[in-house]
Length: 111
Length: 115
Image (cartoon, rainbow over all chains, first blue to last red; front, side, top):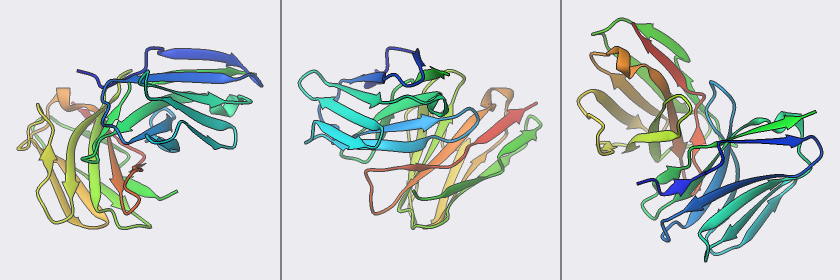
């Protein structure tokens, strides 16, 4: 049973516009949510996180929103840049420090 | 962010041989290290979690006798794929967490090909 789901396998956005990546989860016990960026043949790179007690966290062009009632989080990238093209994974952390990853969304930012 | 290295980055081995992959945290003490496997176009699958000085905790369906994990120090964990088979070919990634345990820092991954 997949506890974290990313239902959009891919997303294409024009440079300068907003990219919105979505993630849904089922485990209400997650205490942190994280977004990772991954290039082919490389390990994931931590991007941004949010505590379950918050509903928004912003870091430069990246903002993560958390809607606990809907068990939904999203990553907003604005403005999108071609260098943002990668696979983005969201993850939830349970109180055993175990991470559950979604299947990823491949973002393509077109110049 | 913290730096985690993996060695080797690529390895090709013959069926029946064993392969060791090293994961090192270079600038922090990793109290917990994780080993993942990624299949093509799939998510990261957690294989096992290891805490320094204790036995690894394996996820359901992962054979502990086939995937030997050792976390001998706060900066080094090793994954040994024993008696490798072609179906073990995959991308193996380690990650480490330290005091700021809500983050995991990932290594660059190891591409294993078993012929």
